[in-house]
Amino acid sequence: QRTHAGDDLSGLIHHSDRGVQYRALRYTERLDEQDLVASVGSRGDSYDNALAEAFNSLFKAELTRNRHKGPWRDIDDLEIAVAEYIDWFNHRRIHGEIGYLPPAEHEAQLAAAEPSPETVDDLVDA
Image (tube, rainbow, N blue to C red; front, side, top):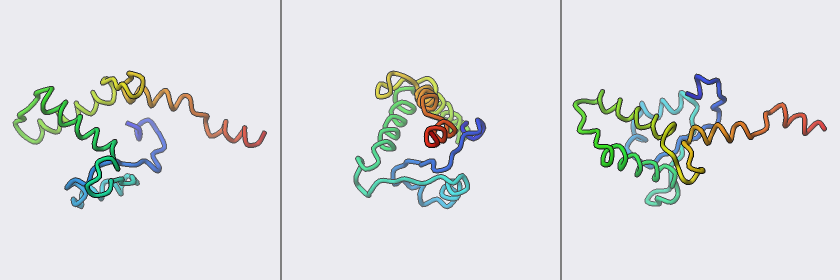
């Protein structure tokens, strides 16, 4: 979505645990293609990468246990369920830690409050 909106994604960090995906060549190539920086915690320390650990826990509980969408017939059904969950999580699920807003709304508010690069340049020149 950010790419389609024309956002600058340079320096974007991809948080994850040390799961098997980091051994998958295709996965790491995809991160590299998008110029994403991979972030993993130190081995055995769930607090070192708490954001990824918290999301993984919510994902498992909300998609598979609480929402009871499965079992899925095939990989296509599972991929659709994951995409729907991510969309719900980012655009409709409220989060107490960010003022009871969905993450997309919170991020939009932060972006609107940040000075633009032109404004920063004007301040420096003044």
